[in-house]
Image (cartoon, rainbow, N blue to C red):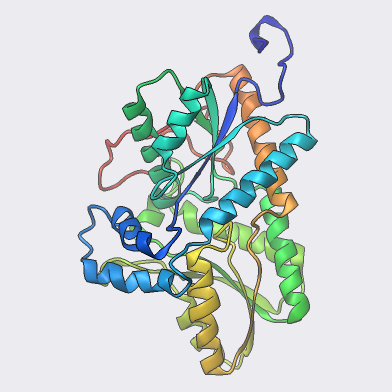
Length: 356
């Protein structure tokens, strides 16, 4: 690979990177893996096994298999196709935070294959501790354990990227085609309010909610055809006395019904694919709520492997490569991207090392 500092053009559009790494949450592939998976997810939180078994019923209802792993395989195939179309194909590795293949396994494969500088993409689009910094902490921990000459950079949060917005707008248009003029509930994962307050670049507050509101507004404008829209939340967990973001999607459905609104589109803009929070919390619980209230509901698709979304990820990767050729390390990116090293602080353990 040519060194751009000597005036030569790079030999690959993603130089200096020689591989991509997709990092995701992970999920069980069968019933015998469900409880072990949930124990990893809740490690250190003191959640009793009885509670894990209750949550596990969400997975057992669907054969004990999370859809997220197959969706990640499909996304990797779509990324390969997009890269090939641009003459930029390269190896893509995959590591999960909470289940096989783990991040450590992916990094071992990367080092064994002889790669030295890798660009990381995540399946989380927005800034928060749980959706951004926790990923960076886990990758840094895996790097430290590996103790190999490997550099990993990342593309940052991409929720506001045009391709992500466009793909969500296309999904919403299709849903509104089935239910014209419906009220739209944009849905994302609830988090503790304190985590929202700590989300985003240093010196800012509430980037998690603010970015979702920005995306919701842009998607609604591009899609058109809704009678109104708002942001709601799903998948609340944790201690009852801890404040989390509200309103819950089911509570809001009941309130809308009381106001005479009986036609809704649920658009899960907080998720990039149909994993458990979508197929259980929305397709199962929220639909049951609508059925009980006599409301008509259509659920918009997640962006999954939609071409505008996949193209946006590769656009972001190429932009990050351009930055890397000029400046080593993690430059402070645009407000739409990430806030650099101090972004999305870990309030419980602020000294925990995290990837820049």
